[in-house]
Length: 450
Ligand SMILES: NC(=O)c1ccc[n+]([C@@H]2O[C@H](COP(=O)([O-])OP(=O)(O)OC[C@H]3O[C@@H](n4cnc5c(N)ncnc54)[C@H](O)[C@@H]3O)[C@@H](O)[C@H]2O)c1
Image (tube, rainbow, N blue to C red; front, side, top):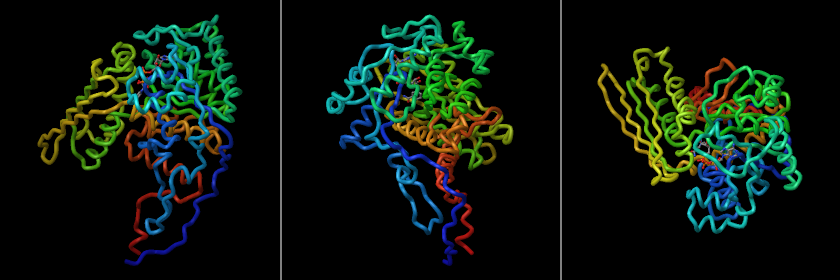
């Protein structure tokens, strides 16, 4: 076969990216199952007794140039990311447990593994949280800040951040929300500008949830913020404005793990083959604290909105009314304590093919929620730190190229999100190629047949 042996052409100059010098401080509001599984895992990998499976930054590669070029560096060799040995951690929680006790309570990791990282985990104690039961009805705890109003609480969080930076010696910081899912809130007047938001904070406006106070504090300090839960948090005009102004990149919402991950793997396949869909019934049983919080209708509504949008955006019923114009899509989450963090997700999928003949697919996913979420947390903090050091990314606000990690990806106002996992992966890897001045991969491939 004759292949055109072109030398690889650089598409454009490499973007300016500062080197990741010094330590990177990771700040986590919410030291529960996901956060502790992430931090314990990083320490286990650093000590060399576990592998960072599921992490694109640690195990993934990027193909460069033609298939015949055989160039596929590892992601962390292709772009300058902070190394695992340079990560330092802090967090906030309403409970007083240090990371070791919190991890033991969460029950995700085995005792033997936890024992090996005990001294490190025990050294991470929770700072007092900004918390209000009105936003998470099923929780209450003693380790909570007091302040004269929400602005005062934000000042206290900012002071925590500065203190952590100083005492840990971190050169840079990133915040990632791993706190509980807050009750459903719609964007309102208080969220439209920095001025309106600050006034609302001093007036203790109920439109301002605790997660927004952490987000405001972080962005005011110029620190990037990722949102792992479906709460609005940084998906608000005020936060977009602050993010761009203070060069603190943002992304969210809601880590794409478990059932939604599978949904965004299967649905693009049905669409690619033009198989119709009449119904998708998804139910979950889980027994961890997240499950308990989601048992409250307000928190569940926030989660439900995040989970339901996925199919509509992937299947595009307006473009394909005969195939996807009439889908019954239902998502249920049931709290069932005996399962702990080992969630079981069932999907009953009714599809139809040639001449309308019906078929069914059943999926039973016995998954471990926090095991799926931990590598996402790692990738997000490393990529957000990369964005902060990259001239082309640091002041654009929302980092849409990180949609890959979210159930409900944030996009510029008026733009629909991409939910298809494979489009999201192309977007992410092409962004990295673009930053390094490499050709984007289109998969056209005609050049091999000239
Ligand atoms: N595990 C997954 O696969 C997954 C996937 C997508 C999203 N999420 C979301 O990630 C978040 C964390 O999940 P988890 O399983 O670790 O839950 P978890 O209940 O184990 O941990 C959440 C922690 O946040 C703390 N918290 C609540 N409000 C807080 C506040 N205002 N300030 C500080 N701490 C606060 C709670 O006390 C708790 O320790 C949840 O919102 C969950 O919906 C998890």
